[in-house]
Amino acid sequence: QVQLVESGGGTVQVGGSLRLSCAASGRVFGFNDMGWYRQAPGKQRELVAVITRSGSTNYADSVKGRFTISRDNAKNTVYLQMNSLKPEDTAVYYCNVESLSLIGRVGSYNWGQGTQVTVSS
Image 1 (cartoon, rainbow, N blue to C red):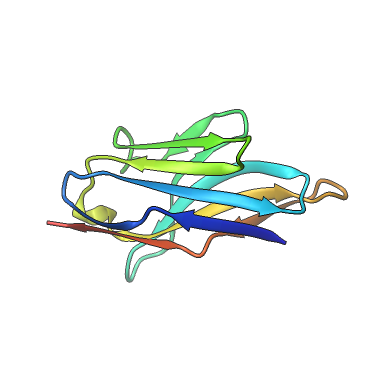
Image 2: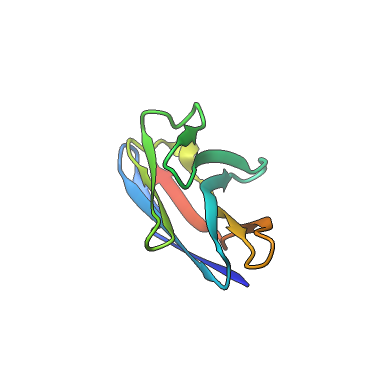
């Protein structure tokens, strides 16, 4: 019912930058919180950053000052600008979006397919 299309992953050297995008679509009333999580090999999935519909943001301590999350409500798209990348940022990055159903405005969370980010030293 909800489709999330991620793009922008890849391989970059230490100190480089990447920008991830996640476009949401579907027959829903709208989208609330939009965020990014990541999962490194052998580790649990963790929150990277989240942004509310009104633009309030929250970041993991490990990315504060280096990553910036933003969204375009007209395009139902969330972005993650990643600067000063470190080897420990290497992971699969997943988009996570809360959708509201047409009937009853019931919220549910949806995951993207994931995009690989590799930071080489």
